[in-house]
Image (cartoon, rainbow, N blue to C red; front, side):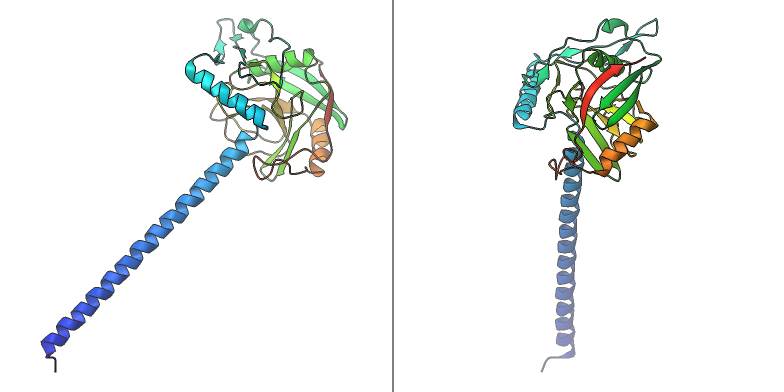
Length: 286
């Protein structure tokens, strides 16, 4: 028969084994929780990146290949750089419209904006975007985005947008936009030049904002733009170039109410608008 001392030693051993098992279970729970949190963070970040990248102009395989070749050229130092605007002594700015040498076959050559070394940086430009769904008056703000405003007005004067379709619509509570500005209607087209984004950390995209799309890399703004019909939650990576007036927003609301075909789902989101939109003309009116 075991003595009291032996019984105490056996009880202590059992207690020690129990404590060790509990500690091991706690370590496993912490490990599993860390794995779950890490996976969730990766999924959320990937989703946000996909959503934002969708505002660029690389929606098909050929454009993706062109973007890859562009990145390689930049690494080798042969790709032209779209430098940020420089303010001149007279209050104008110098804009750099760098040639797009990516090899993208969907680019349309209409030249570059005239006199980029002396671009106006005050006042507004009035455009009329006439579509088969109604007129959308646009006001470009030269003070906020002089290079984008100059490029937008130049392309309109060259009839660059005429006859093009708005290829993408997104209709979410905090991300509602109609994306246009690609003459090919593929989502990968634009002019043969690119320029730098004009943004600050305070740039936001409330309802009525006109903003320039880009490919997700710095200095890749071209002709594609998106019109916000809800307060849109995006990082400050896209040049806010102007505003849509109330009459134009009414047209956008009608287009948004019809939804989209979901062809861009699950990422970058949205699809071709169910109510097709063609820009019949884009003209400078003042």
